Image: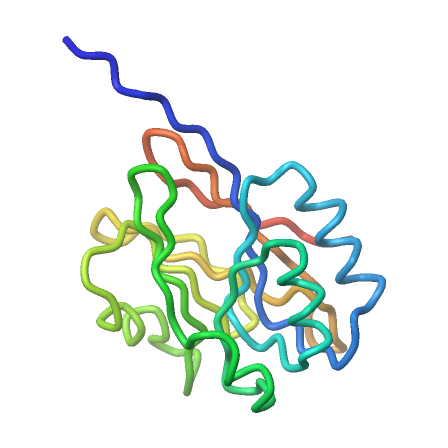
Length: 166
């Protein structure tokens, strides 16, 4: 029997920051919650060029969302595929009603192992038909909800973890 090369990765995931400027909260998420990650993904609604520049300087791979200003939409894609070890992760934001969002987004990609999306501000960590559907929620709190982010643990499979930002 052959030994398979073991892959272990931690991927930080955030979405829906909706910030015009880099906040202390965003810096804390990136520098504290994601300090031991191999990669960071942002599933859209970065909104401003200043925040995008901050995130890109830290190696964040991002897509634009429906609330992003033109300066953001013109510099990053609306969807992308990220290779994480042997797995393919589809990264997109989303649109329309939160109801049925994951199923509506899935046809946007061919073969993937995990779909990371945002838009609804509600965390999702669900396996459907062998694929992981993962929404980290929103990285910035509001009067309607607290802040959450996520970690994807990549080993011989991809598992998601939702983290409440305190």
